[in-house]
Image 1 (tube, rainbow over the protein chains, first blue to last red):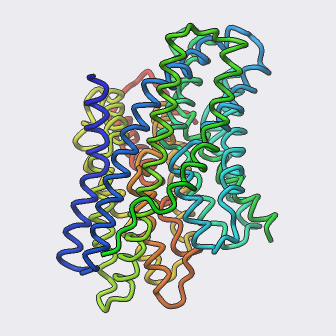
Image 2 (tube, helix red, strand yellow):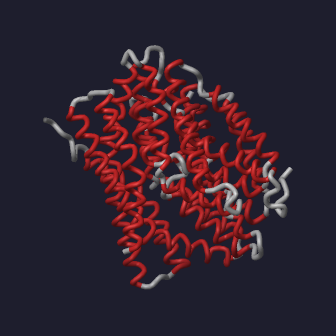
Image 3 (spheres, chains in turn blue, yellow):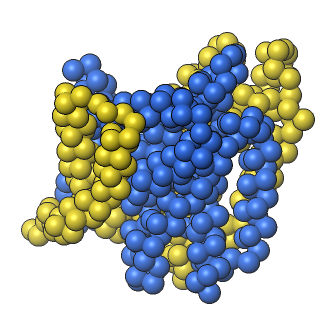
Length: 231
Length: 247
């Protein structure tokens, strides 16, 4: 029950402030038709309810499994299995990530269907999956995190020279949305589990850090490559 | 009055099913080859999936009927108003409000508080990051108003981050880049971004695809730079001496 109350508070804190600002805006500056305001409030109630159920389901039902996999996986001592599982997990959680769904829908809407939502979701998921796999390799071979971050961003900026203009903004936006409420806890659970078993000792706790930052480079690259192919 | 509540809900339900099937398959495979959980655990997981399914469905439906159309309308209304500059202060307030109460941000703040032994308090972090995100949203609106390419903000932003990396220690680098995503919470991606796209669609000479998007990218950059600077201040003050700078 504690969990339910905390989740409720969390959702209210995330949604109420902006809702209040929008209501004030409506009264002071933009007099949209009353219908629009009601439509917004119904939307906010749905988003709140949905986010609440979603977080509850993920934390109570799904995340413990992620943690168990994270703990048992390194015991196999098989690099291919560990890296492969990182890849698969990264792929399946991104497909279910709500923020990714929202962004790709909006891109699809704005481009009048020219850039399909399904293709975008798959590209983003593939990009993230490859970088989660790289992050696993980093943990196994203790490659310093800043080498990979700098390398990743150098690659991003080099590639950007060849990417059509319409794809620049959405590719960086895609990098921001993949680190949502679904992907983050799963990737962290896997990374921390792998790090804590493979490297007993003082540095293990810190090894989980940097995973998310690294993972979010993947989708940027993926959408950029999609843009190059799209030309 | 003509309100849309469940319009298109069937499509959303189908979409959510597709979204969850890969994860369910993943769990089933691991159940057989590795986990071998007992019945009670499995019931719990099924309950988890059921909640997640309806949660995602309502979330997306709310965005579809509420946040997208109304965010877009508000952006259009402000973008075609004679006081179009209002987009900037309004953007600032929205960005600040979305971040100030965001749970993911407060987790990051308490982490920084812990790593610096209370030297950089949660409160200082909260105001700094919220103001930073507010500025990022305002800058995005500024970009849309004057048609400035995203590059002009992204390149200096990432350049600053890259230079800061060379002077920062490992802990702060890792926290900083992890935190990129924390500020892009559910309201930023859904409502504020829709508003930006709406504004870009009515201001003359702007294209919603190139100018309307990019807001999330700038918002994601804010916590990275903030945490790196905070880390630098802390290390320069002779903070954690065991942790050598990286370069």
